[in-house]
Amino acid sequence: MKYKRILLKLSGEALMGENQHGIDPNRLEQYAMEIKRVHEKGLELAIVIGGGNIFRGVDGEKSGIDRVQGDYMGMLATVINAMALQSTLEKHGMYTRLMSGLKMEQVCEPFIRRRAIRHLEKNRIVIFGAGIGNPYFTTDSTASLRAIETEADVVLKGTRVDGVYTADPEKDPTATKYTHVSFQEAYEKGLSIMDMTAFTLCMENNLPIIVFDMNKPGNLFDIIDGKEVGTLIN
Ligand code: UDP
Image (cartoon, rainbow, N blue to C red; front, side, top):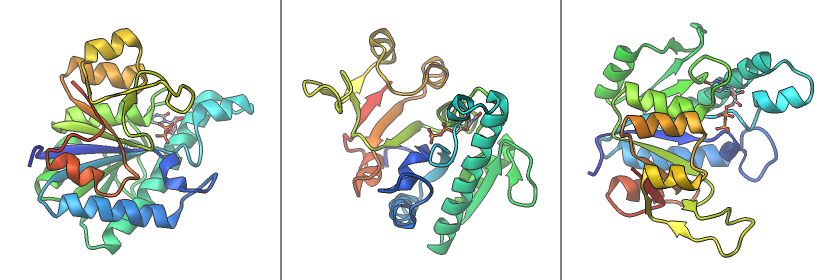
């Protein structure tokens, strides 16, 4: 296998499926099966999940909610998604641990780096909820940071597009896809991969990112099998 330990970032929005809000149980099932397939290969797997299907701090601000308060609401939203994912993974026989950036000991463990690594070594799927526990950050930054802290080989950013394009393919029909792009080029061209904080963390710590379409069955497996899927940024 190409990688030993990966960090998979899933957006909250992806969990909506065809709906406008909330969690689509079919989408959860689909992701659980994709995850099970790679995990059965013996890969160590950590997951960061977003909360955009429920709440985002910046959106709350537009409707008058204090930004910091809204960001904490967003972090709580990620825990709801993380718990739903945890439950679905466990239903399919995977061992998991949910670690939170905010203390909520009735539902999950606090994030403790050494403990997270130990869980991974024991082949438990570790889900990181509540972001990094601080406002003004995103779950993309959480993915970069937790991947570095737990010494993951790569961040796999599962999205609904199949990679990074020269322009937004939904707006510009002439846009072409990169199969590989360096951090430097991506930075200079301002390619949209992750927010700047998340991107810089990866660049400065030589942590490769792969952006890929998580909704295409088999993509996740193909990546860990060493096939060229999506866009590699390194
Ligand atoms: N958030 C935060 N700090 C973090 C992670 C998340 O404040 O470390 C908040 C922020 O308001 C964000 C929301 O949680 O908008 C949900 O996360 P995100 O927008 O990254 O989710 P996604 O876009 O991946 O669904």
